[in-house]
Structure formats: C-alpha cells, structure tokens
Image 1 (cartoon, rainbow, N blue to C red):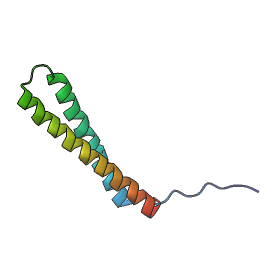
Image 2 (image 1 turned 120 degrees about the horizontal axis):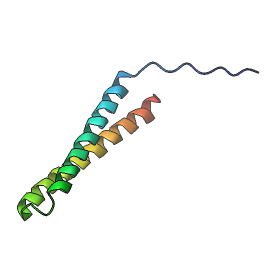
Image 3 (image 1 turned 60 degrees about the horizontal axis):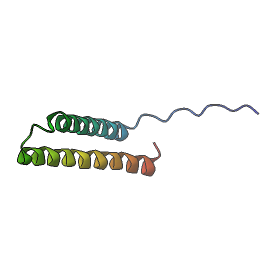
Image 4 (image 1 turned 90 degrees about the vertical axis):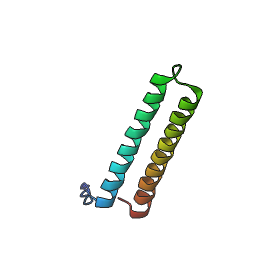
Length: 78
C-alpha cells in the first residue's frame, strides 16, 4: 500500500490576516518591552508607569491576536 501526501489546503485569507495581525502584535510588544528595558533607571516614576501601562496594553493585544488565530484554526481546521 502506497501512501500519498495529502495536497496542501488552499491558503485561507482569514488565517493569513490573523497571522499578520499576530506578527504585528508580537513586534509591537517586543518594541515596548525593549523601550522599557533601555529606559529603566533613568525614568521618573510617572514616566515608568506610563510606559509600563503601554507594555501591558501591547501584551494584551498580543494575547488577543494569538487567541483569535488559535480559535480560527480550531474552528476552520486550516
């Protein structure tokens, strides 16, 4: 019995969009963490809090984008 490779499913445009969104969110989160890392010790407490809040918003967006991608894959099997 010979096994044939299954043809790859056609690209799903919604999955591609979600992957792009997730990639953008990951990049934004990385930039905000690096900004905070490089400015620690030189920021005033209020400035640190503002940047830390921005990092938290970026992290939340990243998690939401990842969840949307995972949900799409789970529902559509693509």
